[in-house]
Length: 239
Image 1 (cartoon, rainbow, N blue to C red):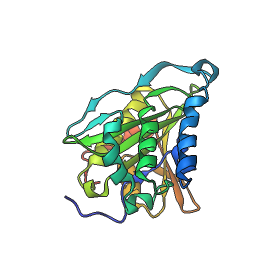
Image 2 (image 1 turned 120 degrees about the horizontal axis):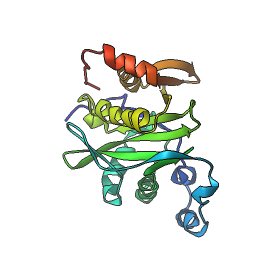
Image 3 (image 1 turned 60 degrees about the vertical axis):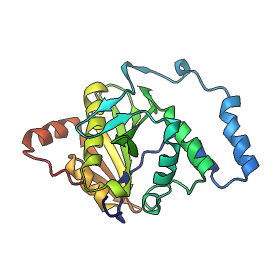
Image 4 (image 1 turned 90 degrees about the horizontal axis):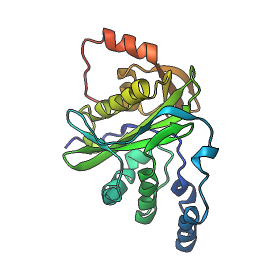
């Protein structure tokens, strides 16, 4: 078990996270708001703009050491422990959640399994030896041909850092973005103090394009990724 680091591996995408907006309400208010999505009809997909010709739907992916798969409610206790880590919350815009709020947050993430239209959000659990240790995500920011792009995010248990798990999981999501979705570039945003995530992004080939207000935005283009992988002779997978 690795020592918990003060700079955990987190890079967040801004998703449609209702539980974040409602954190801190009274139990009754929390219960009522949790029922609103069930009472309010969701806008049909045919009203949400153009679709990709070849959408991507989440599936179970086996890597060398990990399993990437859609979240499930059976992960609730492990997810609560992970997203309650002070060192994780330090670099994410997530509030401190109760077990009930954490379960609803996880329930929201179980729904994000399809990339077909602009603003769709895909999130996959990272599983190691049958245990949830984090997740990775892709947010489809634009689908217009020639300017198709996505944003990547990741969160990994601080106890699992230093073994290359985040690199392994993020590489899979980049493969999906560039080969299955045919995006032109992928961005990542993180706190300037989160040096380990910045190091990970650079390891994957990302370049810094903007740094302000204690946030850094990094971008990896498809052409740069091809050059990066062609020229790389080895990857020091320690992040």
